[in-house]
Length: 257
Image (cartoon, rainbow, N blue to C red):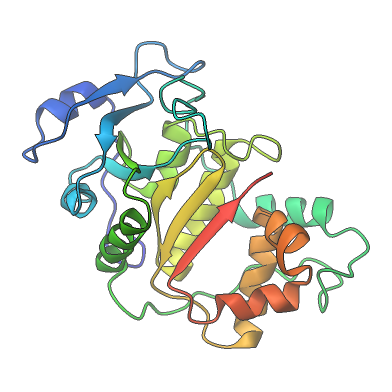
């Protein structure tokens, strides 16, 4: 069990699950990935923009909804072109994954001060509101910011697993989806995170238990740097400046170069 309630088991037959939904879907189709199980689709994708409010209606369906964006000026990528490699979410350990990434990214240590070495996982934070209701709100906010986003449905009972089940390759220059899944699962449990959307190389998360002070935010920022160093390297330039952005932040987004 995580903050916000128990997760359902993964659905293994997406087509059958879609047929049993009691929520009306807009026109769409099943998409298969370039790799993985050729018989099982990676996800279902709407043909047009996601209707307002539908993400929230589908969250408890047993399939995981995603708001989907595409590569700029190339609207077929990655969702229509099948640039997806579905894989089993696995059972990787989040701290093992993050500490290895930290070692590879930290370099001379200037950008990651005050930490001279991996500080370990941040402690869990009590959610300020129900994580699922919070996700519903922020899915609505995300769609309102870009009405062209499409709707995806993945045969996964939790958003972290949807990253792997869909075979999302947005961080391929750094890592594969199973490692991302391991970390986001841990964030679901410690920070009330929910996956609400994916772009070509972007990950969008609602956060119902963000850090409330600079000291706590620094620990969370260390995890963010290990997970996606571009936020510091191509953004704030230092971990301490990055951490200030996390204080009371109800939404996290990541982008990989």
